[in-house]
Amino acid sequence: MSIFKSDTIKKAVVLLSGSGSNFQAILDSIIADEIALEICAVISNVPGARGIDRAQTHGIPTYIVNNHDYSERISFDKALLDKVAKYDPDYLVLAGFMRILSSEFIKKFNKPIFNIHPSLLPKYKGLNTHQRVLDKNEKLHGCSVHLITKELDAGPLIIQGEVAVKSDDDVKKLAARVLKVEHIIYKKALNLFITNQITYENLRVMKINKEIEIPLKVRVD
Image (cartoon, rainbow, N blue to C red; front, side):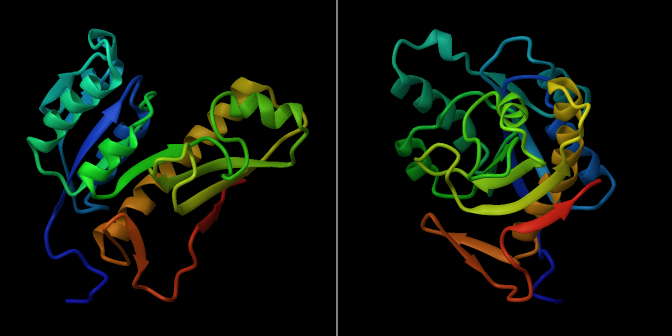
């Protein structure tokens, strides 16, 4: 078997705060046998998040760890990590999770934590990226899959999806096109790790397949 194939199915826990459309896109790719991944649990910090309903529809265990139930961030992080650790996943996948993980959480998990951000990082870290892109009259926008580090939206880039900004774009139109690209590139980023083309050890990324350039670029017109 090639070193770029997965010998075993990897396990992931998904964290989300909202609709979970990226989670659904990943799940669809699993069902279609496009990636060898098992989503063993979905956790949300928001009661009633639609992503929880999506998971329950497919019989995936779900949990709510509501950050408002904890007076201190360290207590929330511990409760969250306890739920994650129960499944001993290979990866933690953030799919619209609107909480910043502490450096202590990241260090203790010590495995890849994936996030998708709606901009071409390092541009436009943080929130309201689509409006900021329009305000700056940018010609190109998109999204980035990166690994989580203690610095906000600054971890190693894995793959980026690019879209042209159109003259008639508003925030809603632009966000919708970028979201479609997110659904395309997230599974590609995960598959680079699942198939051992990129490995991760002691909070460091090591590229095994020298034929790929990181971050990968995907252009969608």
